[in-house]
Length: 226
Image 1 (spheres, rainbow, N blue to C red):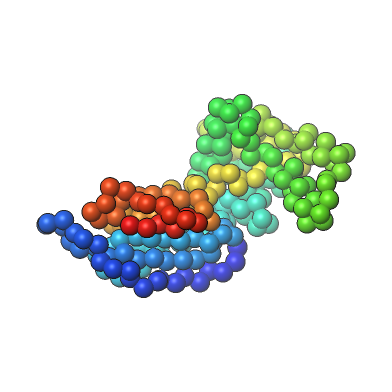
Image 2: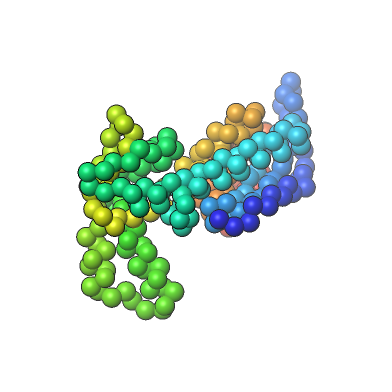
């Protein structure tokens, strides 16, 4: 994770308020989290409310990166992969449990098309891309033996996870940002900001529409316009 500087962009203009409703202004914030640029667009009564809500949302995303990252060797996900093995289930946090249970449900529904156990294969292809060559077929075959959502055992009674083969690596890249976006929107709502857009490197989550609008209009390169 790099670059934790937050910047509040100038207010782009006041949004029209309906009769009897307080006026809300538009604010934008940007910060790098989860190794991608995160952009918040929100409407709030004043700058203090906007800044406080944005700061809390970014902090929540920062917290989730420490749980869900497969790049950070100290993340909870990496610790799980390093310590769990057949016969040894590892208790996990509520966030990691929620993401893994959702991921396993998607794996079942998609008959394995979505599978977070693909980590060993992803790592092999990352290395191959850096070297500009295809991965060796024998190593690819070995990695495939560690892939399969059926190799993840979840115990809801103890909220623990058991990986049934040594060397397994979970990759949450297909679900982590979406979960973080949902959590960021929930944090904004708890701070009284429901009209919001969260753009995490092109993955976008939407709250209520801007004042006086039926919805958000998503323009080029993921930029939001009203």
